[in-house]
Length: 302
Image (cartoon, rainbow, N blue to C red):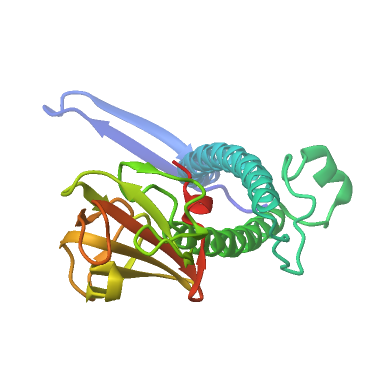
């Protein structure tokens, strides 16, 4: 057997009056040093592990908060999406109603919106389907459908707007009001006795009787085509209302517009008079379509 080595540890006080000795074997000292080093290493490992666990805990808390926020955003998006679907449904219904009123066929897009709405992905359904369509893919699919439907709805409404705008322009250019105040005979248009010669002749307009200076208004929008003297009608105005429609005003005392002027329905264009071949102050009012005279009474709505 090998001889055991011993170490003597001496403890001396400051004044060296007391001296203490501790005798330890080499094996004990080695064991003690080993234990100290082991405890130190374990302490380092525990500190590092605690630090890593603390970081992971913070990361987990961050991801949980981010997941909560994303879930809330998805719920808000779903609510907004479903609200938009309801509005699109209302727009479709209004679109159809307007087209029925104006008798326009439905816009043919070659595409029909189908099956969108409701919850995007149910958790139980997602678990059961495994690798089926993900939430992001489902959301993107619904967004693409909604985008497509919005484009179709926009084109349809644009087509409807263009039609109604054309109709509005046409209505604005159609004579629909009395051009002046006064007395008239609803049977004044057609063949009748000439008040001067007494012979039967065609009367192409409507005579409205009132005092000289009574204002005369354009019954429709248009462009002044002619102002001046015209045969037996005296001072005369012709307004080109478009769509083949024109209106004429004769026996005027004063003309208040110039050729080329644009007028709207209700604009004052002249004053009543007794110029030309006339037996009293009145307005001779004509409506022509493609230069064919028609009874102005048929166009008067109020």
